[in-house]
Image (cartoon, rainbow, N blue to C red; front, side, top):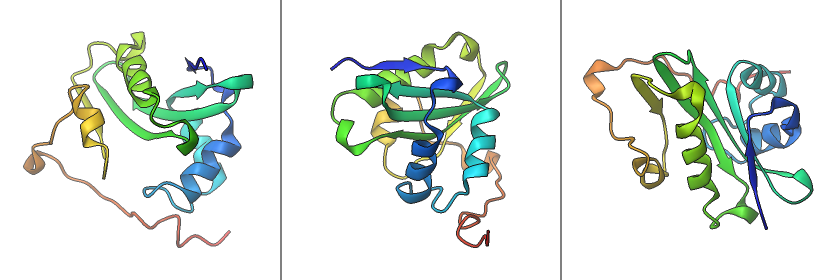
Length: 143
C-alpha cells in the first residue's frame, strides 16, 4: 500500500484528528473540537493518507517560518504503525521548504525519544527554559 504525505488543509479529516487527540492521546485528552480546529487553522499541518485518501496520521508545526518551530500532535493510527510512516512523516517535516534555516525546533514527548533523536532532537538545557502549563485544561471544561 502506498502512502502520501500532504500539507493540504482541505484534505485533513478534522473529525478523525479530534477523535484521536481527545480520546487516544495522553497530551490532549478531552480537547474540544473548536480548539483542534483553531490549532489546525494556525499551524502548518501534515496529513498521511492511504487507501481511498483515508487519513492515517497527522502532525502540526507551530512556526514563524524564520527562527522557531514547535512540533506537536504527531500520531499514526495504530493499524498503520510499524510501516515506517512516522519516519517518513518526520523526514517530510524536516525537509519542508518553509522550515529551513530555523534556529530552534522543540517538541515534547513521553515515549518517542528514539524516533525524534534520529532527526537531531535531544534533551533541552532545562535552566534556560520556562513554561506555564495546565495539562488537565480540557478535562475540566464544561461545554
